[in-house]
Image (cartoon, rainbow, N blue to C red; front, top):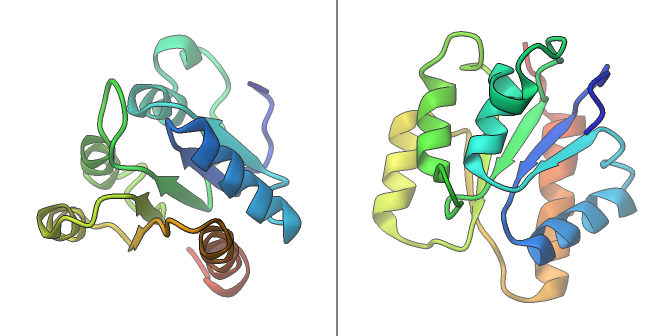
Length: 147
């Protein structure tokens, strides 16, 4: 992990190495993965964002332009990560797009209740998955404007 990150476009929080690799490959193909950091669980993502645990004492990093967040994570699940980020004034404005295999209505409703900016069910087919990730990256990094 590079402690001197000057710019961070995407924080990818995904425990599945295959899904993470597919995300990064699809974003790279469209030149959208230059400033991407991958966290493998919710606890690591929270430590990174709030500079606690192994990241305590590291210089405050820039906020990601978007967080791509899986729900089914080890240690701290995605809903709890979302809850903590959206309830803290330092991180509330960071756009969070849930990217999950869960198609459960209760997850969808809970995420929007907590303030998620987007909820995407991961497509199963590789080509659809890559296309969805590319469109997601283009939207959040090129089209969307954030404060």
